[in-house]
Length: 463
Image 1 (tube, one colour):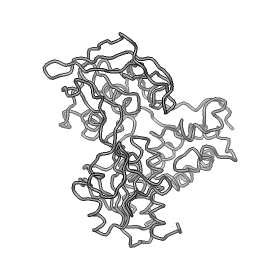
Image 2 (spheres, rainbow, N blue to C red):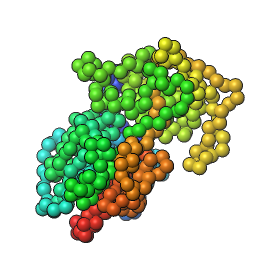
Image 3 (tube, helix red, strand yellow):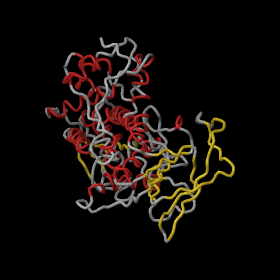
Image 4 (tube, helix red, strand yellow):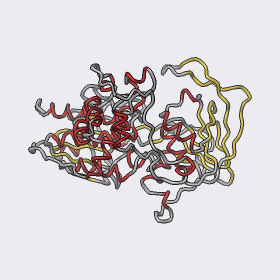
């Protein structure tokens, strides 16, 4: 038993080195580190950590295998419930889920569940011996719209059960937000491709460059013989602040900025013909993970000063603690309790941003204290680029072209929370298209729920 109150430290690139490259920041545990950390697990009878996991990974069981050095056994246990462990081990908000429920966290730090999951997945990937057993084929055809975390999970679960699954992706590359939204330094794209290949190897057919709602409609897919359809198309429509100056050159929506850098490899210019201008001073408006990703990316593209401008305080930042910590180490400047009121420009280009100071008032409906403007506190900061990262909503194409599909006012598809079934018969939905921008693991949980419900729709109550 390892009684240390702290986790085995994760090796990382030095901040002043990594903020100039796009290589992965965290380097992963060695075998010895993983086994040492696994010794901290108490193997509790009441498994609060499992209850905190949206896909119910048997966490103490896999950690016990790591403790014994049986990494293959640990991998089999994890993948019995989680199809994308190398991804989840890197980008899941473990501190709010499995690790947040860990008994060890009552005194000291929780067991490093995410790091152990990542280690096991990477170990197996390096061995390259994952065998895929194709199940007996069933006749029913299922369409999965979107190849992000929700779609991949739903497709994989149904393919394991033998259904004829076709995945439709709007872009030229699979992966959804895993590929276009999360930077290379946090989630290497080669790793995403390997995880995706495991799902394809189960027999899932892929149709790229198909925009459902434009290239083909939900009703047309039904007419083609798809007896169930899962919509996991994400939330890719950016929200803006609606202030003067947002139409200036040099203003980006965060998802456009990150897509151009991640998917179109702007960081590799001139080898990739998609440059992104950032200039010397960059403001990123917002405080979530997307804002941290955009700020850290801008720094790596050569900006001398990068600011996070957020209207609440540090305790209210919605980003993961680890991402905020890494951003600070890399030299990102935090201008908290500030809210932009105008973007200033000259000759059509951004030259600065005008902000007002804020203070926290009474809690709002979400329980967070509402920001209130301070009187006579407007100030300006010189800027060359402004990146807006205040949230996204679903693309309206599917809801506009699908009769009898009930949606929220803001565009999210309304579902039964247990089955993920929509108001349209045979159509299910999950992930960001239902919740708005959320986490990878919650989207995966929704994809898994929907797959189980589709299985039952076809009258199959077996496994």
